[in-house]
Image 1: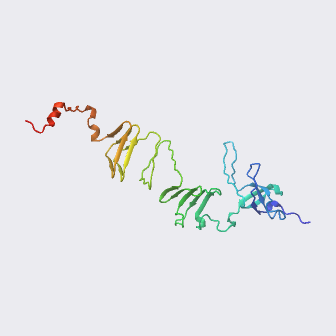
Image 2: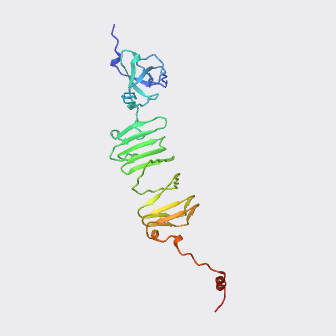
Image 3: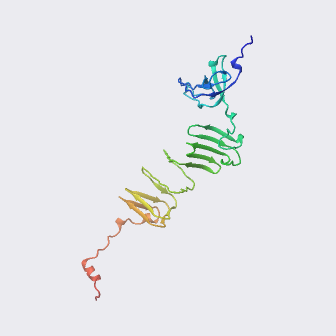
Amino acid sequence: MAEKESLTNREYIGIILPDKDSTHRGWYKVNVPELQPHMKDSTGIWCQNHTCKHRVSPSQAGVSGSYIPLQAGMSVVVKCFANDIESAYIERVLSDQYTNSLPYEIIERDDYYQVIRTPKHNNLIAIYESDIDSKNVPKNSIHVYFNDARTTVVIDETGINVKTADNINVTIGIKAKITAKITVVGTADIHVTGATKLKCDATVDIKSSGALKVESGATIDIKSGGIMNIQGGGDINIQGGSNINLNCGGAAASAANATDATAPTLITASDYEYFTRTSGS
């Protein structure tokens, strides 16, 4: 009688089934036709997931590692530790088994690095290192696509490009420094919920082609160490529910305060009578 072939010397191609692992170990049920030639397509064997070579694991220094889940319908390679079907494990995914499996568009195979792409919300992190622009991908660029591209961040040789159909919230705990020109295309609302200081050490130009309104329910302090120009092509309204202080470090700062000026002489009744005369000597 011929000796049975050892399972440890073979690789088998299988298809992942949608069954859930109740033990929460990250195992997957795989239909392997070569090992189960007479079984239904919905029948499979439980396999460990060894596609992540450094799985999330505890250690004396803490927990470390990575984990990428597999999905039902993926084509995988199954191997066995021992001559026992219950020792099976998934060694790798056969992603190139399918035609047109490069992402989004046909681009140069050796210039595209896809870090991760998820199936439910189509989140993607990728790097394109070609020195030539592709059809939809700029050369030498890093891409982050979130929630089916509702928000995209592309870093390329022109700079950092951010586009979103949702909100942008930026929280800065200490300081933020911007050394370039900022252009807002379209309508912009800037809402500050706490104390705000606008300070410039040179010239400040605030210009509007329409109405410009600066309104405060309390104190507004606008200070410049140099020249400050406020110009509007329409109306400029400055309204304060309390005090509005405009303080310039130039000539205006050295001028006497209004409270220090000599009180004006008031017009008396006789003065009024004099000014209403049509003639007099």
